[in-house]
Image (tube, rainbow, N blue to C red):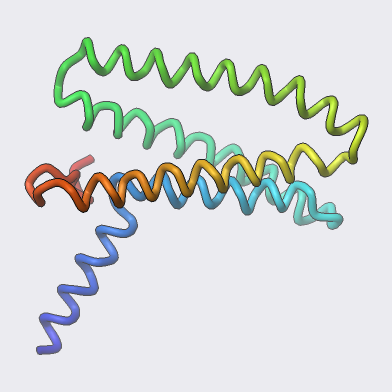
Length: 149
């Protein structure tokens, strides 16, 4: 009985931390890091800044992995997904830069980080709940495996 519960625990952990939910954890990390950037302590803000780079690299890598997974080996679909991701990222970055400067000047220096944390939290809910819903509607053979990387 103990072996069964340990195996169940490992499967549950792999499912929560594996594809596609690994991106959910990174989105939550963006929330925490943006709040850290708005923290009054310089040490917390610098640590958040340092960790943002690592979080960004993992986010890009995991997005590439998910695009490869969902393109199902089709290089045409993969390239379209990558183009959509890169275009969305560039558009969002441009808009965020303009809006952040305005918020910084008119509201407070911390306002852009609070807004970014709020947007990241909204993305977390949309992405995570969308995947929960999708996975509840498909058979187990169609679901991404936690260990297929």
